[in-house]
Image 1 (cartoon, rainbow, N blue to C red):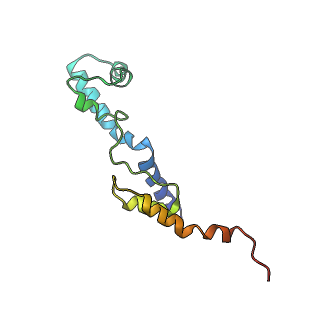
Image 2: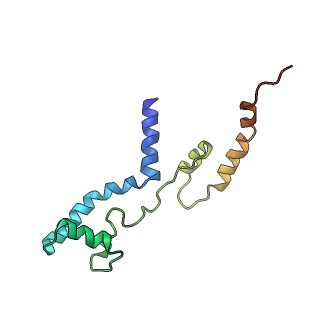
Image 3: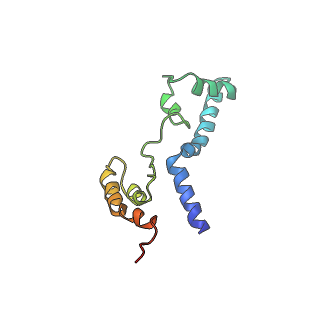
Length: 123
């Protein structure tokens, strides 16, 4: 039970949040070291140049776009709120429509809720 909960939490955090951007931190460190080799720059100056000045089109722009929180992670999966759609979201590749599987799931489950939440009929 605990392992399943941990797997679901890890799946949610890695797909539906920006926490995956933290995996790019080594690129941030390497790019900072590249800047220190070319010019005398402090960490504060580096962070100000790359995060506080908006989009800067300079010679190393392609490297700048690899830094964390500069661009959205392409193809990041988003989990649907409805439990019946989670399987559809996981198995559907990015760019494909999820509308019909979710509507199909909703139609299958539509008659269950009224029966669960109503008291049993008396004879």
